Length: 349
Image (cartoon, rainbow, N blue to C red; front, side, top):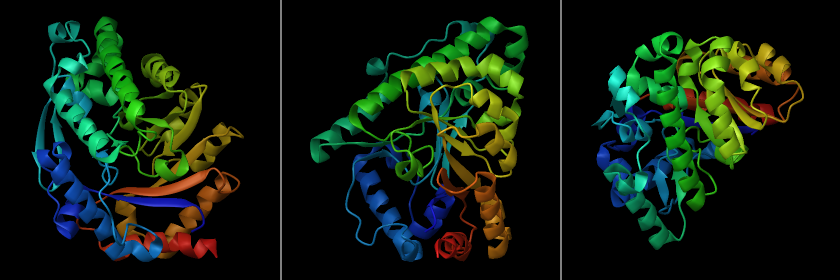
């Protein structure tokens, strides 16, 4: 194909086409997870193997959580949120709606003493014992994403009225993220596949923070309230990346570019690619161009080709680009996915 391209499916697609259940056992029982992971990779081959997706004869691999879906919950649960698991959906984080007093008392947990992390550690130990290695694919979430799970919309009032509470929330989320990130890098060379699987091809060593909810902020708000914490992450993990899945990457690109060691940027579908490319200039930043899973079902092949060509023109070539479509749901016809992949095969010729 012309350049790196990947697709990631929603749990509803996997449940329908591969019969996989996404209950707690999928995430925390290595035997159950290993069997499901083999089935998922074989299913990819059955549908898309002629495009190089999936494996015809997959073997067991020591993957912690999953690089075949994109869903974040672990960090929020470690900090006190309830999580509801469903067979055909991603784990649902229930907002904790922490009170002011609860926020003031909030601290990052001591992971070695936390029963939930002990479940994760048992999996790490299992994989190290049985495979001699770990492929970490925990969704790394993101600082504001975690804080919103804990506080809800009150977080945005804290930004203006309660800076002490803002600092407590964002600091606890950052401290936990750095702790987990260091533990994952201690056992795995790749840690961001659970955020977006394309990093395994495009920028395998990157620490990719998930700035999904930053789509609700202006550049000035991002710089004032969240950039200091992304800088702390970037200091801890020098090969740093930012995932922005919203349709307005251009609105905060100037703030993102204040991170001195930004190596990877995921650009949400619908973003102004000309504006983003102009802001990035000649910086050596690998960029992933997201395609909307909704548009995937609606757009004819010619429109997909036009949009990808526009992306390449905006960046002056595809040397720094990769492409992905994430969140493809159970109602999506596999032929629509083949249509998307086929565009890249034809553009290679």
